Length: 314
Image (tube, helix red, strand yellow):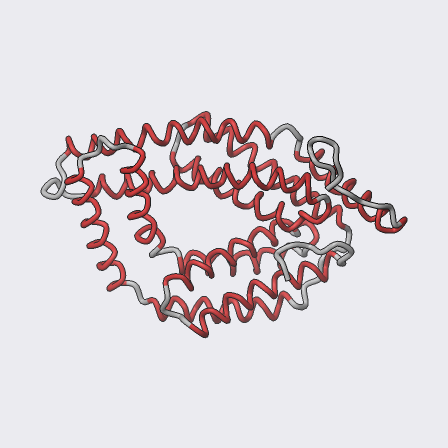
């Protein structure tokens, strides 16, 4: 089934079903192709979905249950994250070059060669099989525990969790825009991704309204993601020895990165303006109201149609 709470589905049952589907995806992929880079990439996405689900249900779970399962999922993600930067940096460098045609091609080639060399060194030092075995063992145990977790069946608990995460998104955005620090923007990116995934989980309560918010949040998360990738690339270039790239050439690429980040951060500020209109508590209350209204429509068998922008029914 899809990554969402289905209409009419009990909160607890939906929570356990969604979690089990993500655990199943991870464990099945590792059993079929543990060595593939795409397997690790897809596993990390499923782990992020699990984190979003856990954050959503945090107030409806026991503190010990939440802390144990969140730690298991978080630690699994960290074990698989080592190769991520080396997989992404070549694409980031290519995108930077496409956005800034003035970059020296020879410099780009030198950076690209250095990335590939560092990637090979990392792969030789990383015990991939040991990391995957640890991840699989931890997640298999967590999957069993999840099947027995008791979650408060009140949808208001889930809605409150969504509101709290929106509050984090707001505060981290304010901090990032105030400090301009790369790590603060990275934290903002993670909270934007979290909010986007939670909106997907809750989308059936009013698909048309939620779809608009999902689109904006995804745009915010994607822009902040590229900003983070640029910051990672900048840090890597700074570590290159002068024999590979001198300080003047490093500065030229660094300036191009900063210019691109300024544009991305202006976009992020604009997108955030569409998301922070609602106060966190108000947002949670709206979600409850949406769900109750949709349930009443279904109960009374009232026709529910969608109208186009010209007023014509579609």
